[in-house]
Length: 204
Image (cartoon, rainbow, N blue to C red; front, side):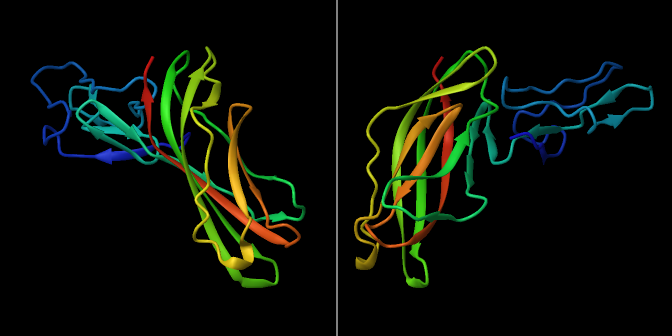
């Protein structure tokens, strides 16, 4: 969420953009606290030595706006495949939630997927999905604490018979959550995972 992405539109051409008005004052565009910010480097200089933002604003990746409502799609995936070399649950993808407003409370529906395959017999491959709601609080430094609203239940019906018994889960961890997977007993497997949240609902 640290990278800045731009949305562009014509001045006064819809949305919540502010039109250029007569006068020498700078024009400020609306921002959404904790989500949207004005880019100081993207501006238009006027002949009278003032400048305007010129209908540009920055949003984190995946953000969309409808009026003053900001929907934040966020997600990620493993940087490298994880070997499930034992029958115990293995951490596959730790996630630290960042860029939420400090001292706030959120609800979010977390979706996550694990793709698993048998080492050396890749034809034995499949994926599992799970959806669970999170209750998230942030402290004054915007560090997140996650509580699962229900026990996660993995949908494993797409796995082939050779991978029967594989499963996955998620649990709170420092600053966020961790996705884990368990291989079928005695079968060496590799795994990767990904997660997504469509919107963090501020319920402060």
